[in-house]
Image (cartoon, rainbow, N blue to C red; front, side, top):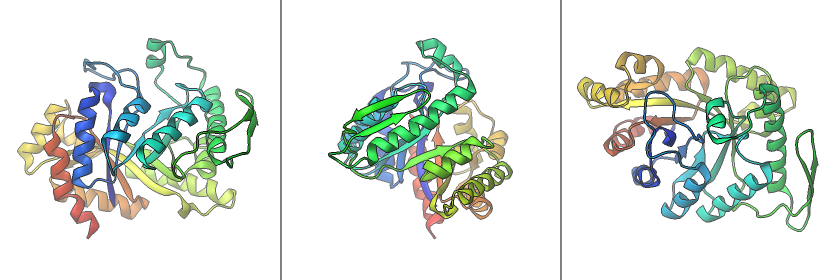
Length: 310
């Protein structure tokens, strides 16, 4: 199972904080460094120094790292128009030498839209726009050089687009969530990877069954879609270190053991093994909330990752 690092910078992080984590993850051998796409803190934190933009951050990391893959869980369709977003992501992919992966969602956190003057349509309209954006972005990237791209939908219209620039490689598209109908259908049509964010294994099994059914309904092999899950992570050499790390992020150890990946390396390996057996996931996104604790990132790479490769 591949381990990836996932950060939530809106909770309080500057670019240099993210760069330190990304470089640590790269040196430690993680498969990727991902970040959220949010403009407002959540919960009882100050969020200082304030939000950083996901794709500006990833552009910087594209030049300040060398080998680690880079992406978002999840870029919000409500934040950007699809044409300029396709340009931005393709440019960052070029800047990175083809290391970008594109996690994309409908957007959900109304308060951040209010705080920064962003429209927040109804759930129905958000998913309509999301579907059209998936069609447009993948269509722009997939249009051969020298040809143009046109699209007419309910919310967007493109005419005679040169569909440039092109990414450096075929950018994997990640879709995720627990929606019962539209999300599985969109995953079946567009996704290279389906991600389950912070769910229990029983729910994951149910959601993945809906994705499989949606694939079969359009004649796609469900095995074509990589399965992954995101977990809050809190690993320590002993119970005292686990408790210290849990306290640093304002969480209870017992709650993290139930809902995340918490405990000693052996405990975490056992839980990931059980998830793999029940759900078929092959990637785990480890949500690291204390970005100053670089030892945590290194310790997991040294003590958990080798057991998952054996």
